[in-house]
Amino acid sequence: MSNDASLAVSSRTVNDYLDCLQVVMVNTTLPANIGSAARAMHTMGLSRLTVVDPKLPIDETSVSHAAGGSELLSSALIAPTLESAISGCQLVFAASSRSRHLPRPVVTPTQAAKIMFDFIDAQAALSADDSNVDNSSTATSSKPNIAILFGREDRGLTNEELAYADYHIQIDANPAYPVLNVASAVQVIASFIFAYAQTHTQTADSLDSDTSTDAQSTINVNLRQQWDEPAINQQQLQQLTQRTTDLMVQRGLANNEHLKLLPSRLSRLGSRLQLDQKEYQLLSALIAKLSKD
Image 1: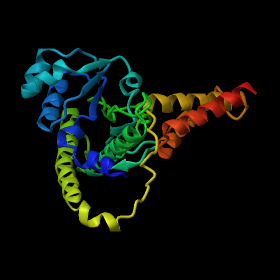
Image 2 (image 1 turned 180 degrees about the vertical axis):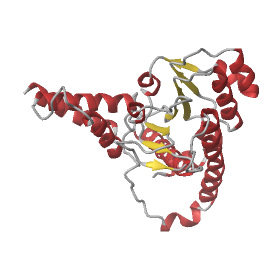
Image 3 (image 1 turned 180 degrees about the horizontal axis):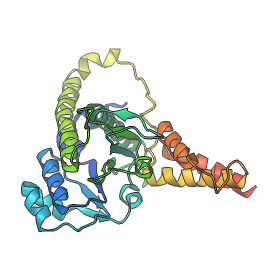
Image 4 (image 1 turned 30 degrees about the vertical axis):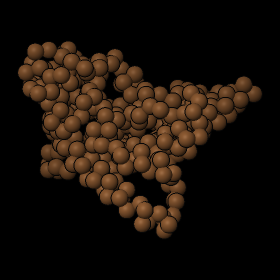
């Protein structure tokens, strides 16, 4: 990581991190819960809310339950589908109270916060490096976009919706009844994220102040999460999953009428690989070539 990239990371504020996160509420039944979630978000410094296909629109009960977070409601995005809500996201988390048939990695709220902030740091460092070597329009300038999904009051997220997530967040709770109200779940997870944000920025400032003395002894270690190209977003991952599925059907490697868990397994494989834009282009070109031959 260059000096400019290190500076870009260490100079980030709590709000810089939190602005990269959006809460996505799916098919919410009660408008009051949307307002309560907005209040919880505002209390913990989160400002981006997307509501997917709510059963009832945001109304006066939403505003009354939002209290100081009413402005957040006025800027909330209403999306027709979950796919459209997260199409531009590079990293997706889902709140889930139980294990699923085809699970993703399960993390605690604190572990989720660490993954989020490490991802943001890696992308910020990449953007800083790109700005030094490439001033063209291809240089990365947009901030990372990370979604946290919350499901319905009565049954949470479906298996298909959970399959969009790279990680599932589970809150430690009474095993006899680990289910939280959706606004309460937003509050708990957001509080862990806010607490981690404060610690993370303080640690970054501390490390930056020691750079002059440690620079000679620091080894530049490249972790897999630190791309040399921007990470792909959720829309690209789903496109790649669909193209791979179609190719396997075309080649007789899968039966179109009995795909079962194939798309979900391919999507999970893509999440685990953490593909970047160049890798996505290579795989897309390979699939296109094989589809024509």
